[in-house]
Length: 542
Ligand SMILES: [Zn+2]
Image (cartoon, rainbow, N blue to C red; front, side, top):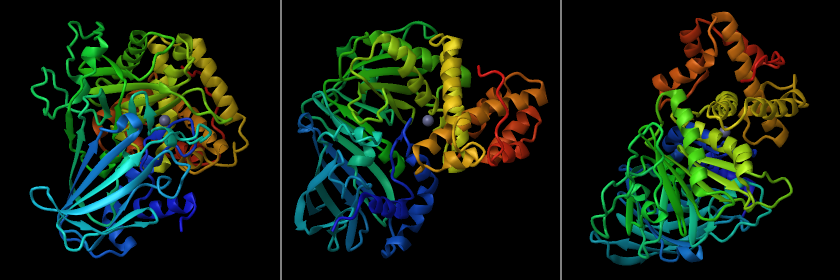
């Protein structure tokens, strides 16, 4: 019998820590990934005990082959090949909400399994049965199994408020799929190698904004050339400082017949985003970084104008930090088909340093500049703070989210996209409503409010707006104590240059603050961020 979604969630969290999802913003439950990343390592080691499986001596190799043949009808057929010292029975699971939630947008069905010979031939069928979160495969001593299933990305009801349910969906002529919703994973076995192959027999336009795959700058050598993607045909701009090199959609949307990549680990696999169908892409460059805009629909504004907006934001953020976190940043503009009463006009989700933005079909250029730009700037900023400087500890969410929101507004102002008075108005209104005017003020520490990803809307807003206020107030306190202007800017840059790839901790933040300003801020943080004392009023927001 299927249990309710919540218990599927709890089971999943017990096994893996948290559902792996990109971090959608402006909604509660926004930061599953952070939580997941924090515990993934521990879980890989502890899964055996939790699920009571015998220890497997050798890590297994996993290969996923995604067949796009039926993508235009919203279906992906996936073959998962497990190689190695397999247990007698292997549980293959998807995150919660996929199994056991018929209202979810993604359904996996039609499982078939075979033992495979060394040459890939099907040697004999293997028994499969349904279990609560997926399927149980009786491997019967096989060392190589092929498990075929179909993923149906039929539309999620528009009234579904959770933005994560809208990431995997049919799009014009194809599908958009999040790794965490399409890849089954074996429970209780260690995984060494991961390979993802995409079979694209109809040569449909295909994008993998994350991971940002290797670009092939030359012409495609053959139909089976396993290189990738969307950078094909890309030409570097003559003047990389300012020039915008726009390509025709035809040249910028290559159609590889086959694509292959190797996720570093299961987290990487879950973070993947894949889009195929009637997609137009445009590319340009900011410094060494390729900036790409992709969309599957026509808008009331020109693609070129949107790309230029994205490029200006990217250039400003790269200029602030000194370099790009990855060699490629993709912004995907899509329709917002969420219709519920509490919907937002714009949704943003980042995966790696790429950004999915869901907008109303009627979005005008003015709305793009005023509203969507802040979502793009925010999500892109997470490429540095959140991804390069890794957000893993929930107790640091106040800083990761607060600083990202504050800096996004400052970046938009610096890029000339927002006027300073507009930025002050937007930030000020949000802080008044969600922090100063929030019933939790003085009753709950900001850090506590921001850390709880399962909290109510009111609490999440309080935690995040409190985080913004705390970052501004910390900057002002440090400026007064050290005589520096905007000392937090240098703290951000140092975190990025000196702690790249490492998890952000409170200790690391305090040490970096001390290194930049000479100020020990531990007591201040205990008082205003980890304590309930109301933050002092902020003198200057920008
Ligand atoms: Zn965020």
